Image (cartoon, rainbow, N blue to C red; front, side, top):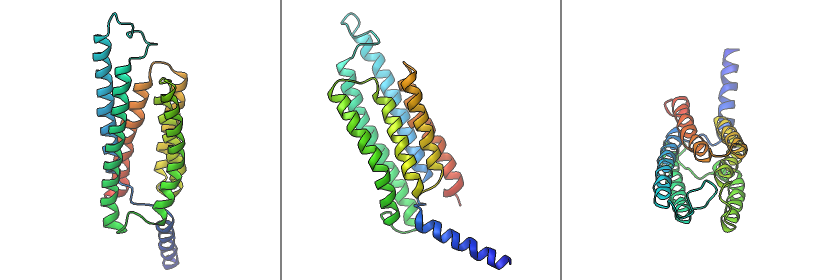
Length: 208
């Protein structure tokens, strides 16, 4: 009886490995979170610097747009995205090399596709908002579309990714109804949640 149970468990593990991408590294989450925290700090202090330098020039009120600050945020967002993706790919590739040998396989392709569709849709919406000079919804929308992307991709990897996506989605929706906390919620979602998720993933899967 025990032998049959062991055989069934081994079969189950083999089926899971063949249908799920299990090389996501917890360190990739931690690195992405650290990058996001640094970016959030730069965004906060740059805002203080620009607002202070524009006293009396009509850009110090909460509803006003500071063109120089917007340009800075766009550049910062691009750099943050590139660094977060690069670090995530590096740590995941390193883990995949040890376990399955190849990072790019049929399962990882499905994962990327399911994640890319919400991200591309969100990117198109955000670009449209930028083109029309609508900025106040962008932090919340990045959280919402990123959360949807994680939820969509979670069926091909660890279940923990689903819960991370759900938390990101909740923070984004909360931001739509709470004014003045965009940067704080963005920092919590992309910074603190990523670090917490990364530590949990590292303890559960990477250290085995």
